[in-house]
Image 1 (cartoon, rainbow, N blue to C red):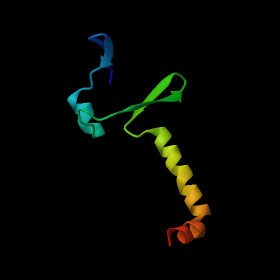
Image 2: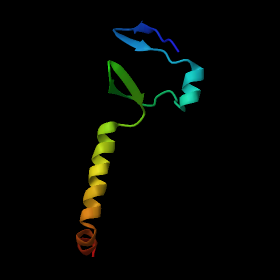
Image 3: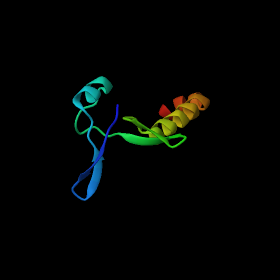
Length: 74
């Protein structure tokens, strides 16, 4: 699907057709994150990749220190 960059006030934007919004489960007001996918490509995702990476790190720490965290919770 070809999209055109349009001038919107002092900024530029891409208008997403209704069919694309529906297919991707997007709604007006949702935030998207632009992530470099290599080779000049950009991936748009509703998920914050930095937050996901942080949560994976927290999960690993919680797994490593499960017994300690149980004791501290008492």
